[in-house]
Image (cartoon, rainbow over all chains, first blue to last red; front, top):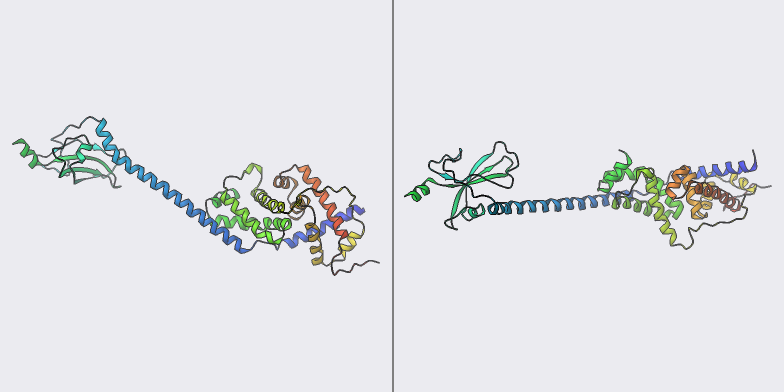
Length: 168
Length: 188
C-alpha cells in the first residue's frame, strides 16, 4: 500500500469515528415543542381566515336574499291573482292568493317541503310589485320551506272575510 | 406518509406533521449546523429551518431533489448568515502550498484514544475554511453523494469533488500539525 493510500485510509477512519460520534447529536426536545406551538398558531390563524371568509359569504348571501325580491319587483311582470289557487295545506274557502314568488333559494331542490302561514308586515308587498292599500298592519303569506329550513317561495293571501268586505 | 405531503401539512399548521418531519431530519440538520457554526447555534438553526418551512409554504420543488436536501439548503442559508457576521469566514481560501501530510500524521492519530481522536478531528474540521468544511461534513460525515451535496451547496458536482479533495488534504495537514493536549506520542 502506498503512503498516499495509507494516509487516505487513516483519514477516512478518523472521519468515520467522528461520524459515529455525531450520531448522538440531536436538537433538544424544546425545539420540537416550540415548533408544535408555532404549528398550532398557524392552524389558529388559518381557521380565523376560513371563518372570516365564511362570514363574508354569509353576509353576501343575506344581502342577496334581501335585494333579490326588490330587484325582481322592478323587472318582473306583476303576478296574476289566482282566486282558485289556495294552498292545499290552507284550504281556506273564498281566500284569494297571489302566485308563488320565488325566493333566494328557489333553485335549491326541495323534498318534503312545508307551507307555513305567516303574518308579515304589509310593506313587504311592495317588494314583490304588489299594491298595498295601507303601509301599516300585516298581511298573510304562505311560505314554502324545505326540510333544510330554506324558504323557496312565498305567496300572499287575502282572507275570505276581506274578500267579502271588498265585494260588498 | 411521504415527505412532500408532510411538508404541505406542516405549512397548514398540522403539529403532528411538523413533529414527524422534525423526528426524521432534525439530527442531520443539527449536525450540519454544529459543524458549521458551533454547538450554540445547533438548536437555533434547526428551529429556524422548520419555521421557514411552515411560514413559507410551496417553495419545495421535488424536481430539485429530496426533502432533506431542501431542508439542508435552508439550514445552509441560515448558517451562512451567521458566518457572514464573522468577516471573511466563508471566503474560499486558496492556499497553494503543498500541504501533503507528513508521515507523522498516522503515528499521531494512531496513538490517540478514540475520544481523543474524535475531539482532535473535530477541532481540525472546525478550523477548515467553511466552503471546504461544509463539503466534508456533507460528503464524509453525512455521506451524501456528490450530486446531493451539489444540490444543497448549489454548485456543480465538479466543484464538490474538487473541494472535497482539497478539504481532505487540508484536514490531513492540520491533523499532522496538531499536538493533541495531554497526548504522549509514541515516537522513537
